[in-house]
Image 1 (cartoon, rainbow, N blue to C red):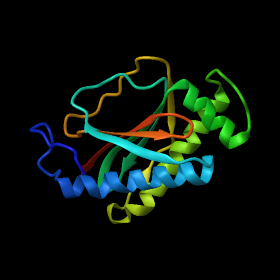
Image 2 (cartoon, rainbow, N blue to C red):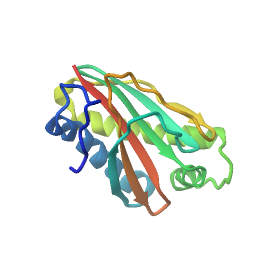
Image 3 (cartoon, rainbow, N blue to C red):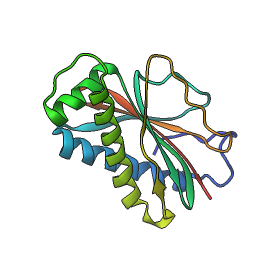
Image 4 (spheres, helix red, strand yellow):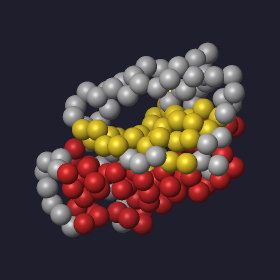
Length: 168
């Protein structure tokens, strides 16, 4: 893993701890994209986010609790979100509709659920997905949590997953 730790990172966070929860999210994402969308998701980057930054046009947040706490946020440009709906249900649209939001919520739920299974030692629970749409939305995390942004490219386009965990 090539993430750089900074002074903003909590003392309990180490490279090994970070890999413990980031790698399962990467593997879960790749698996869900392959099985549910019939496409390959390739990780293209990993970086520590220092400040809130604008999210892509369609973002879905799932809260994590248990022996670790935080969020998983799947962010997609509008075109990629619409392609997810088309791959999942065969419905073609160029606008973000309720059906697009439902598809992104379900996709995020599957990624979080698959990652949760790989993170059994943390005895995690996941919340219901919440989809946020629009340009320029900012997601704020507690100061004790340093989010990582995992960038992906896929057959349907680029997307990101923010992973923000604090091991308790």
